[in-house]
Amino acid sequence: MRAKLKAGLYLACSLLFAGVSSSAQTSQTQTSDITLVYAGQLLDQPGTKPRGASTVIIRAGKVDSVRDGYADASAFPGAQVIDLKNKFVLPGLIDSHVHFDSDKAGQEGFLETLTNSDAYFAYEAGVNAKKTLMAGFTTVRNLGSRGGVTLALRDAIAAGKTVGPRIIDAGMGISATTGHGDAALGLDPDIGEHMHQINLCNGVESCREAVRMQIRRGVDLIKIMTTGGVNSRIGLGLGQQMFDDEAQALIETAHLYGKKVAVHAHGADGINLALKYKADSIEHGTLMDEESIKLFLKTGAYYVPTLSTINGYMERLAKDPNAYPPDVKAKIEWRISITGKALEKAVPRGVKIAFGTDAGVSKHGRNADEFELMVKHGMTPMAAIKAATVNAADLLGVAAEAGDLTPGKRADLIAVAGDPLADVTVLKDVGFVMKGGVVYK
Image (cartoon, helix red, strand yellow):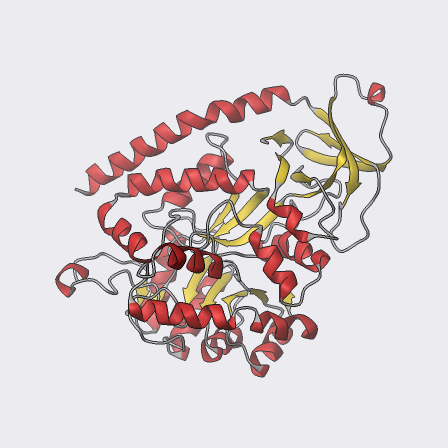
């Protein structure tokens, strides 16, 4: 059975890659070694004042230099020229929290996990990755998927076999049994007891082993869950659901192997537990308190708000009031009512913020909806853009390669019609996407 499943997954991936790799190869053959990008306005270093008319000179997929004005193309024989003189150009965006293997949730998403194979989810991941790239997100951090499909997709994109953003992948999120990451929640016990879940742990030794199992699979970082979740299928609340020694074992083991740790946490107790042991980021952070803020500032951890999850919730409930079971729906209504309050506390205190959407709960390709909510709840457009570029690159450990357009960085850039510093919603309509010097849109 396992061999058959793996064969199906391999076939699915092969077909997916075959269908899209030719477009990537075509783009690459159309791009010469040197490319000149003429920008009407250029935010090459988010957090600093944007430039006016500028030229980004790209060589072999990386930024060679940035010049004021429009460089004379005759000085660069054979160079490709891209005219974005009527556009606002900025670095490719980074989403620090996505789940590529699905675009469904609630009852529909639950049934999907029971009826579809890993081969199916491989296709889903590929489709959602392409949507995300076309939306202007050239790098993402995938924080949980089934069957290793996104780990495989990460490698295929890096090898040029298919189209998508660069992926920093966490494999499967780790939780305690009956925690947010337990896929048997809501299942008939006779079914649930036969599920093979390597991402569950109970006690120190078990938690150390769970981290090592994910590292053995080739993950880039570790994700853990110290509290309940909004989408957990039983009403156990959103407070701490892991003992101190278990969280400590998870975080310290990951750090022993040089892996950062992203922590799903809603309740202040679970947030503070993770920060106490120096987690690298808190995802959601809905009920952070004064102690949480002090710990953020002390440790330098990032807060990833994932505000736009509520868009997915509201859209599904508008379509079907029974889209979620009662226990989950009650938590969703609470989440909608409190969204943004934690960000409003964190921003004026100087907590480091990185952009992340939890896409998969919200819709893939609509990642930029998050900007509007970040600004609504206390951030300036510049701060929100910096969270999705410079800050996110730092959190993901790719600041040497991405996040701005200084010389030596990857030529990841996007263009929009309008000034996102005046109206951040223009980022919802990205008209031009370049990743690594290759034009994809």
